[in-house]
Image 1 (cartoon, rainbow, N blue to C red):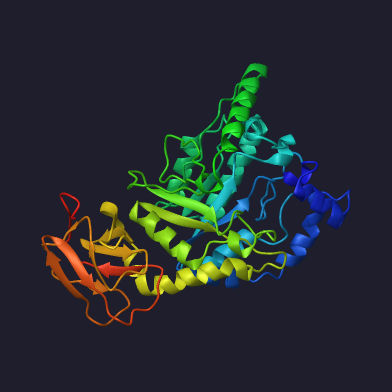
Image 2: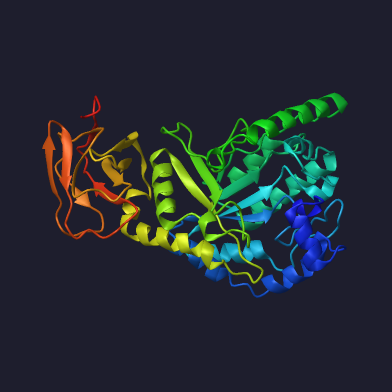
Length: 424
């Protein structure tokens, strides 16, 4: 998209590097050459080593190019697909590494189909194709993905074109993959497009653009309108203060992009500490974390992306007990008496308290009635933890030689209860 926006940095880079006549389609041949030998087992290994339990692969993004050998010709471009079955080969690598495979599909956009060019927020809604042949094309694509690859997660982006029979498509998926789940981005916009509705959309887009420009970068997040049926929400770059009633999957890149971006600097990438604390916070509030990474032109994940994943994997190997298979506790967060943040999870009655900052050796945990606590363990440490209960508050003294960690996790057994009132 941005390579066609005259004057944009991407447009300028493409002209300077490949010449003024280069088009997106000119990259298909070098893409096929590079991906023919790409080591997908290595990519799956990076994900597994980071502690991932599932992977979601982009099968078709907004530019319409398919990464599997679809039997369908693109309505405007004919054969428009990778030479290698990247979806099938990645699925094999992911399953072989002991993870589940999910598939992303952009049903809301196919830029070559209607020559869409997104230059402002109004274009985001006007760029959605609504013609009958596109609805049939997108539906047939997803049906191929369902029956060929049986994805554990069916992840649509933006929205779904109007006119399609979504209940039938969902039923087809659940019948093929009984334990599969779908995300929330399947809302079908109105099929009635005209001068009045398009003008209203453009005016609304201009308002959004105006207000968006005044929001600090650190506070920007996206939540897409949801369809009536979904298994989980998918907010982007979002955080929550409280436990969410609906299951959600917080999605974001390791930096500001959902792929390899050579312009991103180390300061643009999350640190291992930030990534660990982000995961703990999300899980405590009923969420999963979908972290976006992308290979470079050689089919390898750049080290700048791998670094935070390695840190996350190191932490998960010690503390995964407090993440895998857990659910939110009665409260999501509290603080220690020394001001460090604490996040809670629970599994089979066992309560876990993750202290997000390097704690002082001795501290109490607010928000917890520890009257019924009979054991306290520090994950990853064999040495016993000194602890006591003072007027219902759990007080802990940690071992002197405590290794550095983005979050130290205390297992509080099955006797912990939320405090009726915040403990002073």
